[in-house]
Image (cartoon, rainbow, N blue to C red; front, side):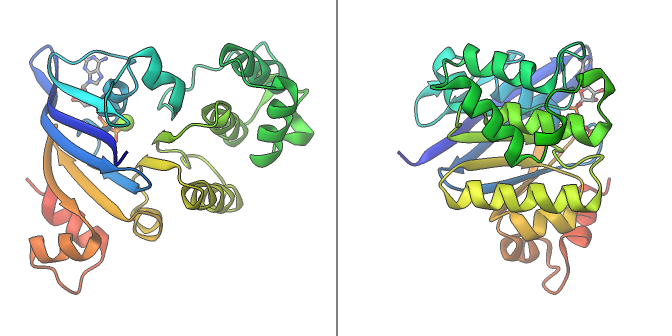
Amino acid sequence: MNIAVKTENLSKLYGQTMAVDRLSLEVKNGEFFGFLGPNGAGKTTTIRLLTGIIRPDEGTAIIQENLPAGSIEAKLIAGVMPESRGLYEWMTAREYLSLFAHLYSVHNAIKATDEKLSIVGLSHEKNKRIGAFSRGMKQRLCLARALINKPKILFLDEPTLGLDPKGQEDIQILLKALNADGVTIFYSSHLLNEVAMLCSRIAVIHHGKLVAQGTISQLQEQTGLTNSGLKDIFLKLTGD
Ligand SMILES: Nc1ncnc2c1ncn2[C@@H]1O[C@H](COP(=O)(O)OP(=O)(O)OP(=O)(O)O)[C@@H](O)[C@H]1O
Ligand SMILES: [Mg+2]
């Protein structure tokens, strides 16, 4: 199996706004795929379409070769860290995560819960109410939730937003390790240094449309900015 994500003419209309406009993308298994675009470009909407939170108006999206995005089969093998967290603030982190472990019928759910809390650095906070968590702690818990079902593919919508430098580095190291273990990563971020460091291939969208995709050197070639960094390339591709 080689295809992790494939969309064809994927489209979503909100009122008069084409939030995602005939987007055709392909991500291969094992890739660390960067998904970039300015505010309002349609990144979150695309991730919501790919994870079945919303349905497209037109076009198709499949996950892992042949599973329709949004199907239960696709959801079982995917992890998602969405833009809005939707945490249950009255629960402790451990209660919350074990709820998801049970939902996914994870073997040895409590052990898996404690393992994931440890991986994201929340072992000491596991019995604290989520409502009393800082933003970075909530972000870490969201990542633990995204990992609880041992996903083959991870969809991450600005996962390091609001994290302190140590937290950002911890997550970068964790994601690299997951990717080295074969997990495909679909990664949206505005931190272009982070994207340049982590991602093997990048797509840039603007006004819902794909404007470029490829490795950084392919993007350099496409834009004629052969000696430039990702920031200059991004600004050229998304300048109106
Ligand atoms: N629920 C909604 N109802 C109406 N319009 C929406 C909704 N969600 C998104 N939009 C619109 O769709 C477009 C794409 O928004 P989206 O949130 O996907 O952008 P984004 O690339 O994730 O931006 P950001 O970098 O700010 O997170 C924007 O014009 C936005 O106003
Ligand atoms: Mg967004």
